[in-house]
Length: 398
Image 1 (tube, helix red, strand yellow):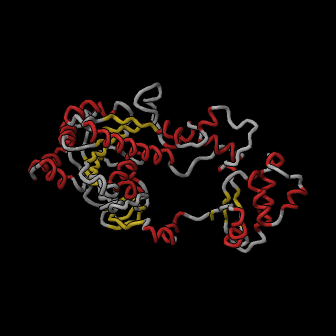
Image 2: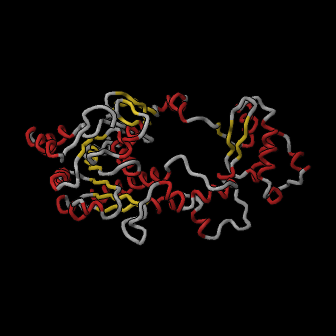
Image 3: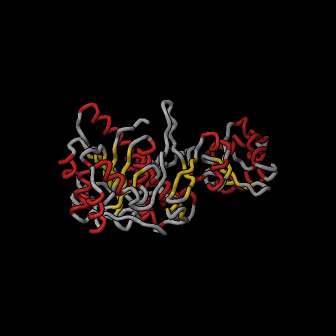
């Protein structure tokens, strides 16, 4: 695997950081996840399989799981000892917290000068917003996603069901880490990689430049995913047709030989259909009602090269033909059970990608990792457990 031999110390929690380190693990890195005594907050999620939250398993499969009290000097010393032979550290504390725990960039660089140290935060490591608590819904609200969706859909602001900002920043952080590792390979010099959720959401929103440069003005854009038409067929199936319906309605009419109906309404070009979104969607709905199912409608639109997608629940994705053929899901251990999780978006010609193990209970790998990497004896480990520096879940739900 591409990152075999790379060791990552993962101090991150919940979604953004664990998403980043799961990517590194999928590419072959050895990831050692270190949780506080009460565990990663995501462990409280439901449902659970084998005593492990299913969403925790998705983000943390393929890692080794330690639980160390980092508020104790002995716990900090353990992590610094592990870092002496590590390549990467990932943390998503608020700026300054890692330093207060004795594990800031300068402290880590003192024991591993060429470390690639990645900090994921809401608004970056400096600036007036650095100390603000930031979670994905906050970033969705403040970086325009909620407002843009509401304006495009013509609704009041509505929350997002998915933590887009967390996953987006996790992907950007992994990219920065990989670039820093390549730079280190060439120069021997490490890096502090500072990745913010706010700047990530600027980068991954295709409308950022349009919005900050005055908006569309009087221009008509064919690219308006927030205005995409949702249409229902007699069998109850819903589809979505992407793009701006005020521009693609002409292609649909041509494909269905219904151009006369547009002419009767005085719709001759996109300029004449502006502001008619709901009327266009209603017309499309009447046309679609004449088809028994999605497949027939899709075939009719094929000549105009107009794509569409069926609205499906995520729960059935694992059984889709494409997902089965691609091996998109794998079964991995979750505590003393088994759970199905997404494998990895990467397919590498030179070897496999994806998790090589599952997700264990909190602290399950304490003893094995400290024996193997720090040559600690059972007596030394026992003493750390008795003192509360090392913690582990013995059984039952977290």
